[in-house]
Image (cartoon, rainbow, N blue to C red; front, side, top):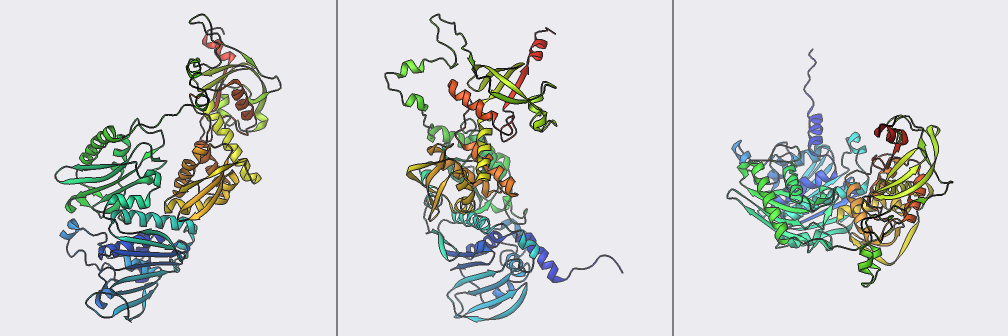
Length: 604
């Protein structure tokens, strides 16, 4: 008997379902796309337990008769294509006829539908791919689909689903993207019986964006329109002052199909070169309309990606046009003086602005003579360093070179502080050489360890706000933030849910400025929503601490410091468990030994 066997139909159905249905949001996507293809102008989505217990989609589309309803549950049964040539002319969201079959194979499934040609509707119940009942029902024209106990017969798949809030966040993202694509359709999303999102129909795309995006973004969208005979792009790009720490604010559509297009993301990023800080990404909502025969939509199991003819040419024109739009309609960011200058009176301003860049230099009466002032720290101040084994001993002490235990460290007396170099590096004499501290990396390390300490000890120093901040998130960010509220409270945030994706912040961690709170929480929600904070508890704490430390008011490069500020920074760095690197592994300090200096001057 041969080794090759034909799999039973039940197993085949479950394998096929696994390719189409990854998680609850996959079910929502397929069902809502079916509703849109049916011409629905009102779509209601209800979920319980993040879609694990229930997903219900109700629409007022054209509905189906009994025969079509039964055939729709068969594999590869579709009304969208009938020949190979039709594959090159697909204009609908669905076309392969696999969604309902796949969903009903891994859930307890009910469909109730009626078209305008019948006075009664049809209701079919399916469990694990087997039809249980089929009969008449009373209902208006349209379709209702209920999916209960998703993956009840695939426990391996079910146990790998994320927490309820995270699965719900993915559902919100699906609803948001489809509602942008179809702004003239009304969408509602109910979460555990409560209305969470309500998007009435809009005549203009901009109005739908106003429904979804944070209020502060509403005046920061620049219209974009590009035409080139065979295709056209329209939509909005955000001004440089509204950015995200990931590409989650980029929405691309090809013939109204939400897709991911890396070439478009690259074009956006290239267009904003020189206007965005490192690690920030522009925001955009762009629609490409192109002849269906110039798009291959059947290249991804979930239809998330497509291939476009002459994609490189489209990308080049996008870059050119977006740069033009930013030059003509963009606005420069507002500049703010540092606090020390803001507090000064206008009469004092000229004298203060004339201070030398090197803040430890004394002004001399003789032009061009700028003597260096030396400061002597207390001899009791010590900093752990590794025993001198090589010029890279400080760098290797972060664990990459094998020197990673306190027993390998010696105590080194601090000497004279010479000041700052380029406003970014602190120069200090030590026992046998010169130590150079990257002030930004060092301060990030300090804040990072203080946040970790707050996790293990229950709380962090917090500053109450006289006037609470009101922050509105999109539905996905809101769901993610709810998941992490207990941990954020340990860091020092006082966050209160107000409903409708709004939160009031009545306390902030002491290491954050009030004006940094909103962006820090929004960036955190985006990063956590992409899974960047997931892992074992200790690892999760470390990732959260790293995210927040990067956004805190850590001392920046080219920021002038007083001597007292430098001394405090050094003393806090001494107390760090790992003073040698920032949270991302970049060196926080290096040492140039006397021996190395002498070698450079050929004195050895």
